[in-house]
Every structure is written in C-alpha cells, then in structure tokens.
Image 1 (tube, rainbow, N blue to C red):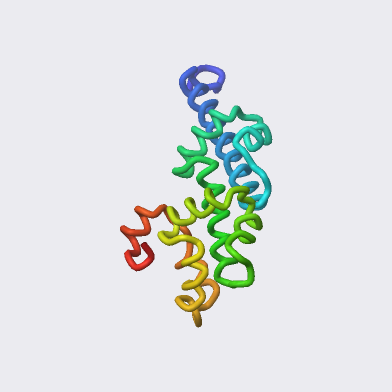
Image 2: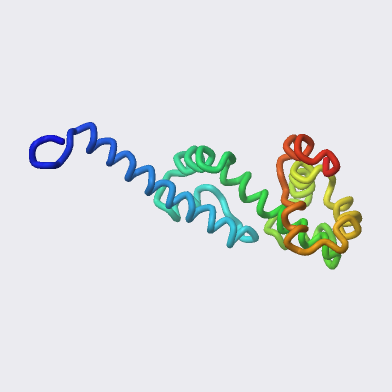
Length: 160
C-alpha cells in the first residue's frame, strides 16, 4: 500500500469498479424480483430501467450478462411458467390464461408458449394434467419449468 494506507490508484479504481458492479447486480436483482412479482402487469424495459435508475440499454446489456437472457425474455418465461400451471388446472380457456398472465396478444402468447414448451398451449392443456397426475406439486413445478425449445430437446427429448 502507498503511504497513508489509501492504496494505489489502480487499487482504488479496482475497488470503485467492483463497488459499481455490485450496485448493478443489486439493481438487476430488484428488476428480476419485480418481474417475478408483477409478471401479469404491463411491463417494459423502459419502465423497469427507470425503476432502478438505469438506461434501458444498460439494463438490457447487464441483465443479459447476469442472467443469460433479456429482461423481456425473462418476463415471457415467467408468464409461460404461470400459464403452464393455469393450463394444468384446466379451469380456464387458453385465451383466458393468455390474458391472466399479462399477455395482450393470443398469437404472440401461443407462439412463445410453443417455443418454450415445445407444444401449443391447447395441446399442453389437453395432455398435461394426465401426464402429471399423481406427482407431488414440487416435482410438477420442477419437471414442467419452461426452457427454450432447443434446450428442452437436448435435455428432455420427451418434452419437445
């Protein structure tokens, strides 16, 4: 350390960069938590970014770096995950489920659902309850978690 115990300029700069990185990670966690809580609400990257005092571009880049997908993709995954649970119950139509999870377009919902799950929501609704009958809810949640279609094919061929 340099005289006075303050460290060198590079050490101070490194600590400053690390402090900023940790702040960004905390903000990203708040954004992810908000998406998890408010998935059925109208959310967009601008609103999410302003809620944590970041620009939309910076939030998108940092979120992707931290979580491996964009904020929008994460939001849609949460919506599809919730839709899967509602469809398994069988009490609501596909259209009702679409709107219940915050999607405003049945076409976009159905396309994204099929991309993540491997089958359209109507097929999932018809078949899921029988396939998961008798499984404990904690197991159902684990085995039915939506993943990108190419990952589903690679990891669990019976789901694609």
